[in-house]
Image (tube, rainbow, N blue to C red):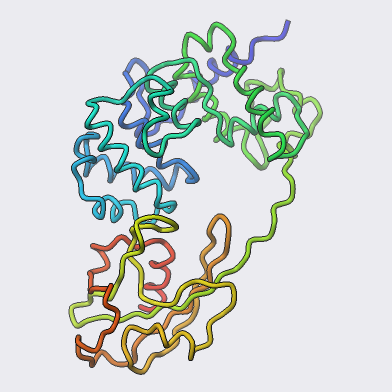
Length: 349
Protein backbone atom coordinates (compact mmCIF):
# COMPACT_ATOMS: atom_id res chain seq x y z
CA UNK A 1 0.00 0.00 0.00
CA UNK A 2 1.40 3.38 -1.02
CA UNK A 3 1.92 5.93 1.78
CA UNK A 4 -0.65 8.69 1.89
CA UNK A 5 0.44 11.82 -0.04
CA UNK A 6 -0.77 14.16 2.71
CA UNK A 7 1.21 12.26 5.37
CA UNK A 8 4.36 12.44 3.28
CA UNK A 9 3.84 16.13 2.56
CA UNK A 10 3.16 17.15 6.17
CA UNK A 11 6.13 15.16 7.48
CA UNK A 12 8.32 17.01 4.98
CA UNK A 13 6.75 20.36 5.87
CA UNK A 14 7.43 19.87 9.57
CA UNK A 15 11.13 19.71 8.77
CA UNK A 16 11.37 22.14 5.87
CA UNK A 17 8.72 24.83 6.31
CA UNK A 18 9.72 28.31 5.18
CA UNK A 19 9.94 31.11 7.72
CA UNK A 20 7.91 34.01 6.32
CA UNK A 21 6.98 37.27 8.09
CA UNK A 22 3.24 36.61 7.76
CA UNK A 23 3.40 32.95 8.74
CA UNK A 24 2.67 31.82 12.31
CA UNK A 25 5.41 29.73 13.90
CA UNK A 26 4.57 26.26 15.24
CA UNK A 27 2.29 26.61 18.26
CA UNK A 28 1.26 30.18 17.34
CA UNK A 29 -2.21 31.24 16.17
CA UNK A 30 -2.21 32.81 12.69
CA UNK A 31 -3.21 36.47 12.45
CA UNK A 32 -6.06 36.78 9.91
CA UNK A 33 -4.99 40.35 9.08
CA UNK A 34 -1.45 39.26 8.23
CA UNK A 35 -2.67 36.25 6.26
CA UNK A 36 -5.11 38.39 4.24
CA UNK A 37 -2.56 41.16 3.62
CA UNK A 38 0.07 38.71 2.40
CA UNK A 39 -2.36 36.80 0.18
CA UNK A 40 -3.49 39.98 -1.57
CA UNK A 41 0.12 41.05 -2.13
CA UNK A 42 1.15 37.60 -3.37
CA UNK A 43 -1.38 37.63 -6.20
CA UNK A 44 0.72 37.78 -9.40
CA UNK A 45 3.81 38.63 -7.32
CA UNK A 46 6.70 36.51 -5.99
CA UNK A 47 7.52 36.16 -2.29
CA UNK A 48 10.89 37.94 -2.48
CA UNK A 49 9.22 41.06 -3.92
CA UNK A 50 6.35 40.99 -1.44
CA UNK A 51 8.32 40.70 1.82
CA UNK A 52 9.59 44.32 2.02
CA UNK A 53 6.18 45.69 0.99
CA UNK A 54 4.45 43.55 3.60
CA UNK A 55 6.84 44.73 6.29
CA UNK A 56 6.35 48.39 5.34
CA UNK A 57 2.57 48.01 5.32
CA UNK A 58 2.57 46.29 8.70
CA UNK A 59 4.81 49.01 10.15
CA UNK A 60 2.52 51.75 8.79
CA UNK A 61 -0.76 49.95 9.53
CA UNK A 62 -0.33 47.45 12.42
CA UNK A 63 -4.03 46.53 12.35
CA UNK A 64 -6.80 46.35 9.78
CA UNK A 65 -8.42 49.32 11.56
CA UNK A 66 -5.28 51.42 10.97
CA UNK A 67 -5.36 50.53 7.27
CA UNK A 68 -9.07 51.33 7.05
CA UNK A 69 -8.49 54.83 8.44
CA UNK A 70 -5.58 55.65 6.12
CA UNK A 71 -6.18 57.91 3.08
CA UNK A 72 -6.32 55.95 -0.17
CA UNK A 73 -3.59 58.03 -1.81
CA UNK A 74 -1.27 57.16 1.09
CA UNK A 75 -2.02 53.46 0.64
CA UNK A 76 -1.38 53.74 -3.11
CA UNK A 77 1.91 55.51 -2.45
CA UNK A 78 3.04 52.70 -0.15
CA UNK A 79 1.89 50.14 -2.71
CA UNK A 80 3.62 51.89 -5.64
CA UNK A 81 5.84 49.52 -7.60
CA UNK A 82 4.01 46.36 -6.54
CA UNK A 83 1.75 46.53 -9.61
CA UNK A 84 -1.85 45.48 -10.28
CA UNK A 85 -3.14 48.59 -8.51
CA UNK A 86 -6.73 47.39 -8.34
CA UNK A 87 -5.41 45.17 -5.54
CA UNK A 88 -4.46 48.24 -3.50
CA UNK A 89 -7.82 49.91 -4.02
CA UNK A 90 -9.64 46.70 -3.07
CA UNK A 91 -7.28 46.25 -0.12
CA UNK A 92 -8.31 49.62 1.26
CA UNK A 93 -12.02 49.02 0.59
CA UNK A 94 -11.83 45.57 2.19
CA UNK A 95 -10.08 46.96 5.28
CA UNK A 96 -12.83 49.52 5.69
CA UNK A 97 -15.52 46.85 5.45
CA UNK A 98 -13.75 44.49 7.88
CA UNK A 99 -13.12 47.35 10.29
CA UNK A 100 -16.82 48.17 10.21
CA UNK A 101 -17.69 44.51 10.91
CA UNK A 102 -15.07 44.44 13.65
CA UNK A 103 -13.26 41.25 12.63
CA UNK A 104 -12.35 39.03 9.67
CA UNK A 105 -15.12 36.51 8.95
CA UNK A 106 -14.01 32.89 8.95
CA UNK A 107 -16.77 31.62 6.64
CA UNK A 108 -15.73 31.22 3.00
CA UNK A 109 -19.00 32.65 1.66
CA UNK A 110 -18.72 35.70 3.91
CA UNK A 111 -15.10 36.20 2.85
CA UNK A 112 -16.19 36.11 -0.79
CA UNK A 113 -18.40 39.13 -0.16
CA UNK A 114 -15.39 41.30 0.73
CA UNK A 115 -13.74 43.50 -1.94
CA UNK A 116 -10.81 41.88 -3.73
CA UNK A 117 -11.38 38.40 -2.31
CA UNK A 118 -12.15 35.65 -4.81
CA UNK A 119 -12.35 31.86 -4.74
CA UNK A 120 -8.66 31.26 -4.16
CA UNK A 121 -8.09 34.00 -1.56
CA UNK A 122 -11.20 33.12 0.45
CA UNK A 123 -10.05 29.51 0.74
CA UNK A 124 -6.49 30.53 1.54
CA UNK A 125 -7.66 32.75 4.40
CA UNK A 126 -10.16 30.17 5.67
CA UNK A 127 -7.60 27.36 5.66
CA UNK A 128 -4.49 29.21 6.84
CA UNK A 129 -5.97 31.71 9.29
CA UNK A 130 -8.96 29.72 10.54
CA UNK A 131 -7.80 26.09 10.09
CA UNK A 132 -10.71 25.11 7.86
CA UNK A 133 -10.32 22.14 5.48
CA UNK A 134 -10.11 23.87 2.10
CA UNK A 135 -7.51 23.50 -0.64
CA UNK A 136 -6.60 26.97 -2.00
CA UNK A 137 -5.86 26.32 -5.67
CA UNK A 138 -3.37 28.63 -7.37
CA UNK A 139 -0.78 28.06 -10.07
CA UNK A 140 1.46 26.13 -7.67
CA UNK A 141 -1.30 23.69 -6.79
CA UNK A 142 -2.35 23.31 -10.43
CA UNK A 143 1.22 22.33 -11.24
CA UNK A 144 1.42 19.90 -8.31
CA UNK A 145 -1.79 18.08 -9.21
CA UNK A 146 -0.92 17.92 -12.92
CA UNK A 147 2.33 16.17 -12.03
CA UNK A 148 0.97 13.96 -9.25
CA UNK A 149 -1.85 12.69 -11.48
CA UNK A 150 0.12 12.80 -14.74
CA UNK A 151 -2.47 15.03 -16.43
CA UNK A 152 -1.21 15.95 -19.90
CA UNK A 153 -4.18 17.94 -21.17
CA UNK A 154 -2.94 21.54 -21.61
CA UNK A 155 -4.00 24.59 -19.67
CA UNK A 156 -6.22 26.57 -19.72
CA UNK A 157 -8.69 23.97 -21.07
CA UNK A 158 -7.73 21.47 -18.34
CA UNK A 159 -8.13 23.96 -15.47
CA UNK A 160 -11.59 22.82 -14.33
CA UNK A 161 -10.44 19.19 -14.16
CA UNK A 162 -7.21 20.13 -12.36
CA UNK A 163 -9.21 22.06 -9.76
CA UNK A 164 -11.58 19.14 -9.32
CA UNK A 165 -8.66 16.79 -8.68
CA UNK A 166 -6.82 19.30 -6.47
CA UNK A 167 -9.84 19.68 -4.22
CA UNK A 168 -9.38 16.02 -3.24
CA UNK A 169 -5.80 16.46 -2.01
CA UNK A 170 -6.88 16.98 1.61
CA UNK A 171 -9.33 14.07 1.80
CA UNK A 172 -7.18 12.10 4.24
CA UNK A 173 -7.65 12.31 8.00
CA UNK A 174 -4.25 13.89 8.70
CA UNK A 175 -4.86 16.71 6.19
CA UNK A 176 -8.28 17.32 7.73
CA UNK A 177 -6.67 17.58 11.16
CA UNK A 178 -4.11 20.18 10.01
CA UNK A 179 -5.75 22.31 7.30
CA UNK A 180 -3.57 25.39 7.89
CA UNK A 181 -0.32 23.44 7.73
CA UNK A 182 -1.50 21.37 4.78
CA UNK A 183 -2.34 24.43 2.65
CA UNK A 184 1.01 26.03 3.43
CA UNK A 185 2.83 22.74 2.80
CA UNK A 186 1.36 22.70 -0.71
CA UNK A 187 2.63 26.25 -1.27
CA UNK A 188 6.10 25.44 0.04
CA UNK A 189 6.43 22.29 -2.05
CA UNK A 190 5.47 24.21 -5.19
CA UNK A 191 7.82 27.09 -4.37
CA UNK A 192 10.91 25.09 -3.40
CA UNK A 193 10.73 21.56 -4.87
CA UNK A 194 8.00 21.17 -7.51
CA UNK A 195 9.05 24.34 -9.29
CA UNK A 196 7.90 25.33 -12.80
CA UNK A 197 11.29 24.60 -14.37
CA UNK A 198 13.78 21.95 -13.31
CA UNK A 199 11.76 20.48 -10.41
CA UNK A 200 13.88 18.77 -7.73
CA UNK A 201 12.07 15.44 -8.04
CA UNK A 202 14.76 13.47 -6.19
CA UNK A 203 14.15 15.63 -3.10
CA UNK A 204 10.37 15.53 -3.34
CA UNK A 205 8.58 13.78 -0.44
CA UNK A 206 5.73 12.78 -2.77
CA UNK A 207 7.78 11.18 -5.56
CA UNK A 208 6.49 7.65 -4.80
CA UNK A 209 2.95 8.86 -5.56
CA UNK A 210 3.82 11.06 -8.54
CA UNK A 211 2.87 9.83 -12.00
CA UNK A 212 5.02 12.44 -13.73
CA UNK A 213 8.09 11.32 -11.74
CA UNK A 214 7.48 7.74 -12.83
CA UNK A 215 7.09 8.83 -16.46
CA UNK A 216 10.10 11.16 -16.28
CA UNK A 217 8.18 14.12 -17.68
CA UNK A 218 7.59 16.28 -14.58
CA UNK A 219 9.38 19.28 -16.08
CA UNK A 220 6.98 19.20 -19.04
CA UNK A 221 3.80 19.42 -16.93
CA UNK A 222 1.47 21.14 -16.84
CA UNK A 223 1.32 21.61 -20.57
CA UNK A 224 -0.01 24.92 -21.85
CA UNK A 225 -1.65 25.96 -25.06
CA UNK A 226 0.37 28.58 -26.97
CA UNK A 227 -0.30 32.11 -25.76
CA UNK A 228 -1.30 34.76 -28.27
CA UNK A 229 1.41 37.34 -28.89
CA UNK A 230 1.10 40.45 -26.73
CA UNK A 231 0.19 43.58 -28.68
CA UNK A 232 2.34 46.69 -28.32
CA UNK A 233 1.02 50.12 -27.35
CA UNK A 234 2.84 53.44 -27.61
CA UNK A 235 2.76 56.69 -25.66
CA UNK A 236 4.80 59.85 -25.03
CA UNK A 237 5.36 61.50 -21.64
CA UNK A 238 6.80 64.89 -20.67
CA UNK A 239 8.87 65.69 -17.62
CA UNK A 240 8.73 69.17 -16.10
CA UNK A 241 10.69 69.83 -12.93
CA UNK A 242 10.53 72.93 -10.73
CA UNK A 243 13.47 74.54 -8.83
CA UNK A 244 12.60 72.50 -5.71
CA UNK A 245 13.03 69.22 -7.59
CA UNK A 246 9.29 68.51 -7.67
CA UNK A 247 7.90 66.91 -10.83
CA UNK A 248 4.72 67.79 -12.70
CA UNK A 249 2.41 64.81 -12.24
CA UNK A 250 -1.23 63.99 -12.75
CA UNK A 251 -3.33 61.25 -11.19
CA UNK A 252 -4.86 58.51 -13.31
CA UNK A 253 -8.59 57.79 -12.96
CA UNK A 254 -9.37 55.70 -9.86
CA UNK A 255 -10.58 52.72 -11.89
CA UNK A 256 -8.80 50.82 -14.64
CA UNK A 257 -5.17 50.03 -15.30
CA UNK A 258 -2.79 51.72 -12.80
CA UNK A 259 -5.87 53.39 -11.32
CA UNK A 260 -5.17 56.13 -8.79
CA UNK A 261 -1.42 56.26 -9.44
CA UNK A 262 0.56 59.36 -10.43
CA UNK A 263 2.02 59.75 -13.90
CA UNK A 264 3.91 62.21 -16.09
CA UNK A 265 1.53 64.12 -18.39
CA UNK A 266 1.50 62.93 -21.96
CA UNK A 267 -0.41 61.27 -24.76
CA UNK A 268 -2.91 58.44 -24.52
CA UNK A 269 -1.59 54.96 -25.31
CA UNK A 270 -2.38 53.62 -28.75
CA UNK A 271 -1.40 50.84 -31.14
CA UNK A 272 0.89 52.87 -33.42
CA UNK A 273 3.85 55.15 -32.52
CA UNK A 274 3.32 58.89 -32.13
CA UNK A 275 5.11 61.36 -34.39
CA UNK A 276 6.82 64.18 -32.53
CA UNK A 277 4.40 66.69 -34.03
CA UNK A 278 1.41 64.67 -32.81
CA UNK A 279 2.89 64.13 -29.36
CA UNK A 280 3.76 67.79 -28.77
CA UNK A 281 0.06 68.63 -28.97
CA UNK A 282 -0.19 66.92 -25.55
CA UNK A 283 2.85 68.68 -24.02
CA UNK A 284 2.02 70.54 -20.81
CA UNK A 285 3.92 73.64 -21.87
CA UNK A 286 5.11 75.21 -25.13
CA UNK A 287 8.88 75.04 -24.82
CA UNK A 288 11.87 73.37 -26.39
CA UNK A 289 11.66 69.65 -25.62
CA UNK A 290 14.50 67.15 -25.86
CA UNK A 291 13.81 63.50 -26.60
CA UNK A 292 15.64 61.43 -23.99
CA UNK A 293 14.77 57.92 -25.11
CA UNK A 294 12.27 55.14 -24.58
CA UNK A 295 11.29 52.73 -21.86
CA UNK A 296 9.62 49.34 -22.27
CA UNK A 297 7.18 47.97 -19.72
CA UNK A 298 5.46 44.60 -19.96
CA UNK A 299 1.92 44.29 -18.67
CA UNK A 300 -0.02 41.03 -18.53
CA UNK A 301 -1.86 41.63 -21.80
CA UNK A 302 0.31 44.09 -23.72
CA UNK A 303 3.73 45.71 -24.04
CA UNK A 304 4.00 49.46 -23.48
CA UNK A 305 6.65 51.64 -25.16
CA UNK A 306 6.87 55.17 -23.72
CA UNK A 307 9.01 57.90 -25.26
CA UNK A 308 10.27 60.40 -22.67
CA UNK A 309 10.77 64.10 -23.39
CA UNK A 310 12.33 66.68 -21.09
CA UNK A 311 12.47 70.44 -21.26
CA UNK A 312 15.81 71.87 -22.28
CA UNK A 313 15.31 74.88 -20.02
CA UNK A 314 13.90 75.27 -16.52
CA UNK A 315 13.06 78.91 -17.24
CA UNK A 316 9.28 79.04 -17.49
CA UNK A 317 6.35 80.77 -15.88
CA UNK A 318 4.02 78.53 -13.88
CA UNK A 319 1.15 80.25 -15.68
CA UNK A 320 2.42 78.82 -18.96
CA UNK A 321 1.52 75.30 -17.89
CA UNK A 322 -1.70 74.21 -19.57
CA UNK A 323 -1.99 70.77 -17.98
CA UNK A 324 -4.73 71.77 -15.54
CA UNK A 325 -5.20 68.32 -14.04
CA UNK A 326 -1.55 68.19 -12.92
CA UNK A 327 0.45 69.55 -10.01
CA UNK A 328 4.03 69.51 -8.81
CA UNK A 329 4.84 66.75 -6.36
CA UNK A 330 8.05 65.44 -4.79
CA UNK A 331 8.74 61.98 -6.27
CA UNK A 332 9.09 60.37 -2.84
CA UNK A 333 5.60 61.49 -1.87
CA UNK A 334 4.00 60.25 -5.08
CA UNK A 335 2.31 56.98 -5.99
CA UNK A 336 4.45 56.15 -9.02
CA UNK A 337 3.98 52.91 -10.94
CA UNK A 338 7.01 50.92 -12.07
CA UNK A 339 6.51 52.23 -15.61
CA UNK A 340 6.60 55.85 -14.43
CA UNK A 341 9.63 55.18 -12.25
CA UNK A 342 11.42 53.91 -15.35
CA UNK A 343 10.53 57.13 -17.17
CA UNK A 344 11.78 59.33 -14.35
CA UNK A 345 15.02 57.39 -13.96
CA UNK A 346 15.61 57.72 -17.70
CA UNK A 347 14.91 61.43 -17.52
CA UNK A 348 17.33 61.82 -14.63
CA UNK A 349 20.04 60.14 -16.64
